[in-house]
Structure formats: structure tokens, C-alpha cells
Length: 254
Image (cartoon, rainbow, N blue to C red; front, side):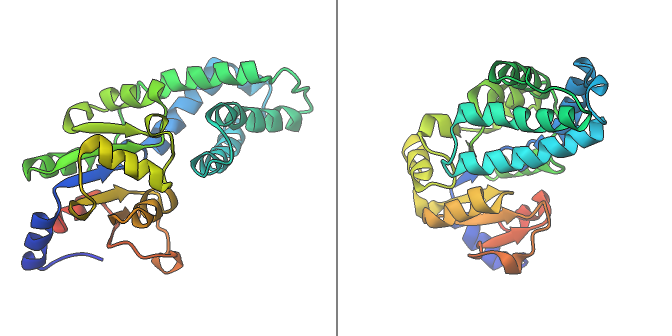
């Protein structure tokens, strides 16, 4: 849905004062930066000697990563399990695919690999196309901007700095501080308390329907779905207020 009418745009601009914005893959190009970081980690650790190929490892890693983050968001696994499993599963699979013994892929080893990956990716500056331009536009319009993320303390603030985005936000709300992950209502309740915002004058912007958009809707928030991954809107359980394909299209709404 794209708002073209200036009278409607003016009404919306008057309605909203605060914007809750997802960070990973909405502003920060986590997917693209992950590709870079994984290749660096693969080469640095000489995994070519024990795995079929980087491409095979990359695909196994991303499939696992999507699965464990979804489970983490819904409280099915904890933070420590996520950190271990996103390396244990793909590395074990790749080593066994080459006929190797994967008994050395211990939780301690996985935590170390995850830590090194975090160090690498947190230095990558890549942002989603239009992110900085949109933030400049929104800040110029006087909106208060707040990050709402399920990401971990040890990397999120470093990624914000590397991407040159840290100066745009009044508040950074992380699920570790909230004691609940998006999409849970408790996360958004914490965000309202932390920022002093009101539901009726706040809108959520995010690329992940389940955690960002459905979570916001269930918490009584309006939402802009940044459909970066080309999800069929007809498959959505509940329709967001707006759907955009590119970040800069949000200028037509706010």
C-alpha cells in the first residue's frame, strides 16, 4: 500500500511522533554483511580442508540460523542454545559430508566461533539501500527514532557504530534488556515504558513479518511492513497498515 494523497500524508505526519524501527535487515544489511563475515571466518579457520565448499557451508549456516532465531524469538530456546546450535549443526553436517569426525565440534568451540564471527561482522558497515537517506528524512521531520531489536548487546552497538547509525536514535531497546523478545507483547510494553511513548502516536517499521509486524499489531501498534524479501501479502495472517518494497517509499507515508 502506498500513500499518494498529500492530505492523508499530512494527517499521518500529525498522528505519529515516535517510530520503533527494527535494526537487522531493516537498516543494517545483516544478510549481506553476514555473507562477508562468514567467508572471512571460513578462510581464516581453513575450513576448506574439512568441508565440501564455502557455498555448502554458507547455505547450511543460513538455513540453521533462520531456524534457531525463529525459535529464540518465540522462547523455544535460550540465547546460549542459539549461539551453540547455529554453528554446531552446519559445521557438523559439513564435516560429516566429507567423511570426517565431528566430535570436536563442542559447545565451547561453537561459542568461540560465534564470538569471532561477531567480531568480524560488527566491523562491517553495510546498510540496506536507502537506510541513511530515510533516517535523515525522518529526523528532519522531527520524529523520535527508537531501535527495537532482538540482537545481542555485544554486537548491536558495535554494528550501529560501524554503520554510522548510532547518532540517529533516542533509544536502543534490546530484548535482553526487555526480558522478552519480539514478537511478545511484553517486549513492546517495555519499549513503551523505556521511551515514554504512546501506542496511538507510535508506528513500527520492520522487515520481518512474524517478529516485527505481527508482534506490533498484537501489541496494538500501527505497522509499516518493509517487504524486503518479497513475501506475498495475501499470505499474511493480519494485514499491516502499510507495505513498502523499498525504504524510501516510507517518505510517502510519514
